[in-house]
Image (tube, rainbow, N blue to C red; front, side, top):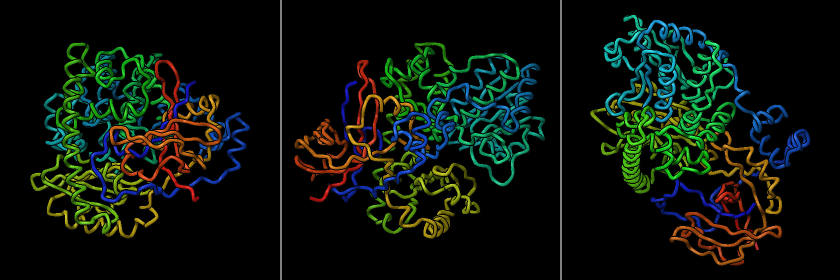
Length: 593
């Protein structure tokens, strides 16, 4: 195994950093380092499973303390997935769906316009068609209809002669639609993973692992995960031993794109899906991999989140959802090739719109010192595209390290999208402002909402009062949690083999951060493209090449002879059939002379 060390600074988005903050940090540490104390449970776990102590420490730091939990985390596979019928409502949902199939009743699958929603639609429609169902789908247009299953969709659904509607990735607050559907003899099954409001719609069945009453052991499933469990249950009920692993390609993309926690079942679904993506044979996925430059390459969770997901998502964000759906339903290689080219173009358009909004928003924040005045940033404009503001909110959240809600003003309404820092639940705060909103929903760290434009001042006042009382100075301090010390000498092929068992990384299972102390810089840093720095480092008798991404202008005090502590993570990749190791250093801390 060849080992190459790359020192990587924090990047705001993959390959780009187009907005500069006015204050640069020089060589000073960007974060408050929090080194996790030694835990004796890690020593016990290491002995029980014959693990390197550092690997056991990482597991314990993530709340995995018993041998059984650790074995499931490291070695769990598809055979270890929970029985789908543990989820409340599953039996009723399956029986109603199969009755509709046998009676040739018209079924409509209603989904959301993001990656999770679109791929949920594709999976369920394909399965129902394979069973001979009369099935169609409907996804609302983002700009015209907004998010979710609304009462104004009912006439269109009834026009389609629908007898059974199945929602995917939405519907948990669709009280008006379900009430109207019942009055018109239309049955509704809701599959969702979002948090409910007060009470639940009176649907035939509700599949949502988030509900306290769901009875399902894993509450972290994304929309595609819930649909996968429904598909599992359908074939189990039919007594058909169906290989469903090929659907995991879509499950893995949807789960990562929806920023679901990568632990529990999600971890298995994504890991197995990544394996299947290497074997992709359908023209839609093959064309998508090709345009992303991923054909015949090892695909990881970063590729899902930064290459595949954004191209699918661009269609929904810019109001052309059907393009992405056609890609996954088409059997024509020629058509799929044309569709992915169009998706690629839309993604480029999305990126340009995103950069424009980002620059305008950052300018407003810095010009008015909003990040000094407020613990939560609220901004809006009539010139901002509401299909893109969620991505921009996430980047601003990273830049200023505080919760952000951005609004696009259209036709007297304010369409908002918010993102939060890890330790603060934005959905709880939004819920307390619910009387000012027309609708809202989301997760702990990502929300969407709509309100009348005239209510914006009152909303800002209410949310800022909550922020002032809830968001402490400590919450707004950037922290770098270091799992443990790991000297360069301990990075052995054997250690790396165990380390790869921790993959995939993401929310809920972050890439572990290690610390190496007393590291010498052996060469003068060389700028690359006027953006990055390349130099050599030595610690514990081993020398590695290092690259500091996007740090050519801010790490100006690093020179040959500098003595540093490094906080870094590992990334394992394959290049021309050889395994290579990359050290992504998250931060540096100068040692006192």
